[in-house]
Image (cartoon, rainbow, N blue to C red; front, top):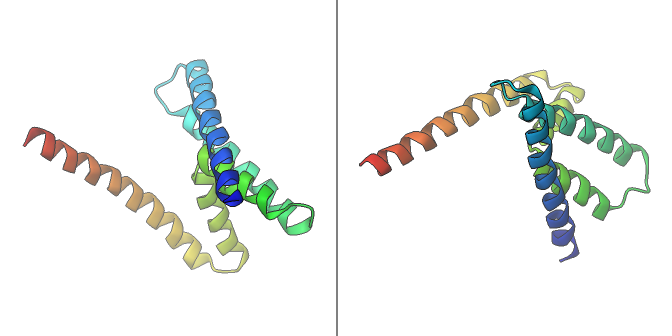
Length: 127
């Protein structure tokens, strides 16, 4: 139960932070390009990199803190950070083929899934 609370609380903080930062960056840029989402993804990746190094090199980072930060906060802030971290882990393990496949699969399948979801709903709504 404590694990669920740590993830949930972190997710709340991460999602609210994402909402605020995307809005701030996007209104400041005044551009059509999604700079807010880009900023969140890059920041989330930098933070997960820092947290994973601390988790690997410091024993003081408890499981609860890691759940709060990595799964909750960063998961609510951007799942792109998990994707970046997992891809880098594959590269660090010397598995460049799997890393490339992960990038390709995530980008192609995720964009394809957005398209499929749109088509399905448009078909039902207009049907």
